[in-house]
Length: 414
Image 1 (cartoon, rainbow, N blue to C red):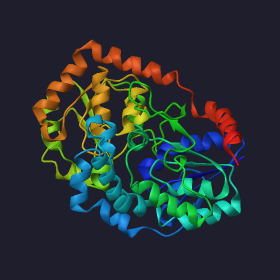
Image 2: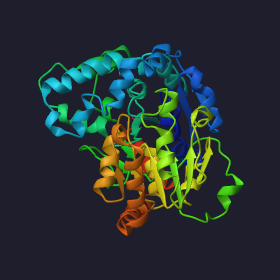
Image 3: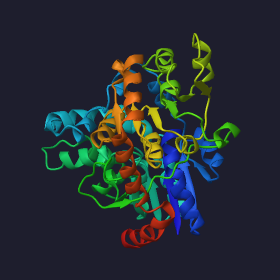
């Protein structure tokens, strides 16, 4: 069958899609990945065939670094999606106002540049299945326009699906349905709820970390992919001391112009511990440090799936891919979240006893030191981390869900 992936031009999100795209390819299916033109090189670098559609959204890139947007994103989930974590917020006023704002300033911005050309390509290529990540509603519009089966592939908790379920049945207006319905009617079809949540949803998180709506889910084990990488020689030798990794993600430096914690203070606070600390930091951050402790190795990048396998603990920002990759190795984690879904994910992991979390505003050197010592010295964290690892390993790998996707495609294809 022909499978078309649709994604916004966000490298960190695209990387969640790559293992499934390759699973479908190796099963003999024809795969294409559609996104804005500037993203084509990222897609082809993953060995996949890119389909540039529409135009590059300069507004999207500008808003990523707008001061007001940064403050809002760093506060956690925006409304209405914060109601998925805190049901007390699920009032008609809160949800409707959140949808009104995000349709205007987020979802339109992501999707409008791509919709018409994505539909045109879908009409030309005639995919049997369109797989889209939860923000790329252009994928559902294209699927409805040609009668293809379509599905979401999640990259975190399903806050989009849960919020939508909370909103259904509330008094109109419905800003999201009105917006998507307008595009549907341009192509001779009417709005339906699957345009928001897909005909089915591929979920990469284990039950311990996920939240879900009353939808059809296909579980799929997270498979780490971080782009081109090389395993350095030092990583092939077992560490002489317990190894602790510090990785706070690309979002802080690429979108937010810096970290919310003082890296130097954290390194100093850990500097006298009998550990080997491996910190992944940009050259700019490293050069700004007044000193680097003797027990610390600073590298610009190292493949996390290889690094985590050698670690006794990992300090990170609670990005879903980082958390899932570390969890696959049963390693206790200290989360210092600062963005969107990260606080909720960090809390979920801590609730299951597989790690600790510190709000980035309170992540001082002494606080991080105390938490790391607890992870290293209290066996309960490793025992609970191994439970989540076993839960993930019991999930089907991307290749193993391909037959299920074939069945669902046949059932939903018009």
